[in-house]
Image (cartoon, rainbow over all chains, first blue to last red; front, side, top):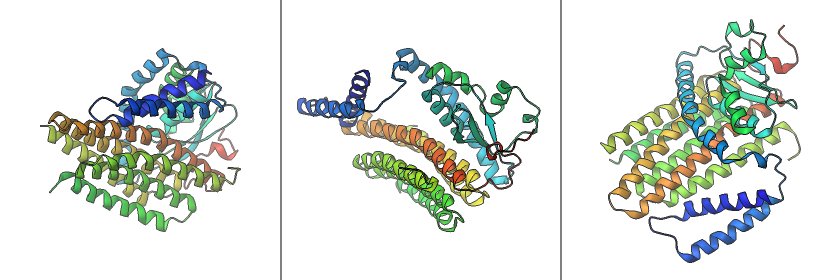
Length: 168
Length: 85
Length: 117
């Protein structure tokens, strides 16, 4: 039921955004939107989403607060890749990190963040939610570090904390 | 000269370079990477063209193209993996 | 003034899109190519979509009411790119690894089973 209501509301907001053209909506547009949103909600309700309890308002606000930090890291990542495209200096490798996240939502968020930020690309996630990350320029002092928390810091700075705050 | 048309021409060049990789690519994943890059470039090209001719319909097409090209990429990747679809 | 914002955004977008395709040509294997092909095109698309959004707002402010939907729709297209691009890259990387492509010149490969220590 909860999935049905949230899916319907989200589809209806999307419909309103897509049909907005400078003036207010007509009555028949809104009616068609309600009908199609309920249809979309009915189809989505059949899919078993385990973590639907977690999406509260504070998490949405936290997600928005995450954006400036994320955008900064992303800009840094792009200048890094641009530098490597021009000079061709690379030292690739695949490393394993265990951020210790528990549910799918936070792991998805972390994996996507890792893919878009400095020199790293998620290759594989295993059963225990360990991430295997392709790193374009492996740092030498990474191997001296054996504590898991510090290893995460090299690859993805403070993203696991953000993912935990948003997703769990 | 409309600045959006100039942008579109320059983006056409990057599509051509990405296409070289899609043709050359020694392995199939290389070709898929080239295709994925071309897809993203075409989406931003559609946005720019919509702004150049002041038609909103091209931007709607870009949204649909983005979602469809994502499904295509995931489908090819799943096929390469050899798992069940 | 408003045109200069559009020029700068379009310029940054073009530069990063060109870098993405150059990186695609220069890098040695699939994984490094994915780095170039995903990050740079996403970043370039953000700036190009921003330019189109600013242009739509400008036209709307000049009195062309329907152009506000250009801004809204460009934002939705940008959102679609932002969500789907890293997921697609992850799918390709996993498929490449499982179909047996090894990372070229890798100094460490902890996914391959053998540990470094």
